[in-house]
Image (cartoon, rainbow over all chains, first blue to last red; front, side, top):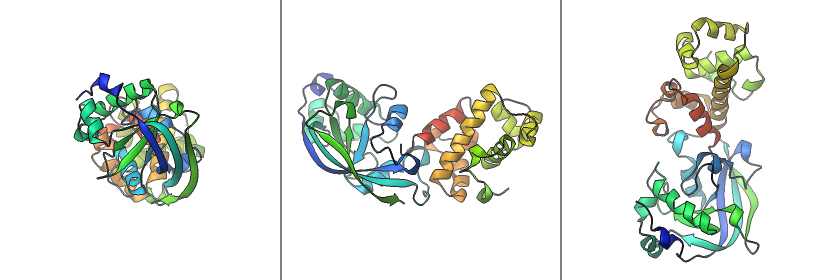
Length: 173
Length: 120
């Protein structure tokens, strides 16, 4: 499914503020704003080698589900393998892909953008939104029922917005 | 050597022969299998493990990638779970077991790439 490209250039943005979370592997824990993994590998809403994104979650349960996927899925993690970071975020222009009206406007369904192991439709949304200059998007988690993620295009965060790693809350698991 | 005794955290500082031996043990490869994975003959594997010679060029890169895999696994899993990971079909590797995927062209490098980006 390809999203309506014209609609992606017009779809409304809105502010997003609050606390968000990310689980970072211990060896990378001192780089909470790093997008290396996303840039290198290409995740759901960014394109490998073209642009990165900072993938945060609305809650820790979603972080656990998101970090336990892919090549390491389904196995018990080593105790303390990940560090839990908390962020204070204030953004002005975010596209809400968790909104049914937005999904209808761009002509995709929630199912289209949450296919496990297939980022094709989602990255086809992320790339035009990045090129449009929005600061990020909120999207339903593909790994956690009712979970939501905030994916931030850090290089588009404007001067009136902020993304601050505020605390290391501990380790997981 | 049991998996529990494999020291993956300090592998990079170990003598090269020990690294090659440890990596082969980690994946459960015989010398013949490991020779096929690295596109050399069995005698070369034996000489690497004895420390008589060290891998060069593309062979060195492949051993380095295997070591990166081992280090990532050591950071993410306990030794008994690493064994499970290596022998378990993995959807992210086209449904193949990592020890089989390692035998495919570029398989070692793709696994090293994917593991290095976990939680990064």
